[in-house]
Length: 89
Image (cartoon, rainbow, N blue to C red):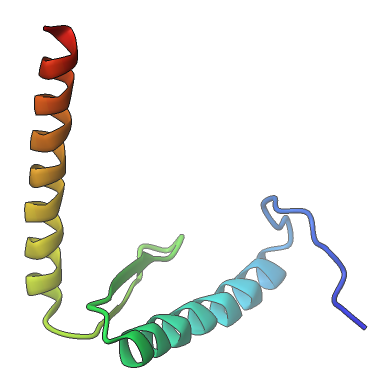
C-alpha cells in the first residue's frame, strides 16, 4: 500500500514544521551523497533553515563546486546571448 499524497504548502504548526524540516533535510543530504557516489557526480548542496542555520554537503571542496557552477553559468549565458544575437540577424 502506497503513501497518501500530501498538499505542498507551509506547515502551520512550528513543531511539526521543524520535525519535517529535519527529516527532509537529512533525506536530501543522504540523496546528495548517494548521487555523488553512485554516479561519480560532483555535488554541492547548501541549505539555510528558517533560523538562518547553515547545512551543507559537498562531494569535493565546496568552493571548487561553487566556482565550477559560476563558470558553467557564465558559459551558459554566453551561449544564450550568442544564440539570441544570431536570431536577431
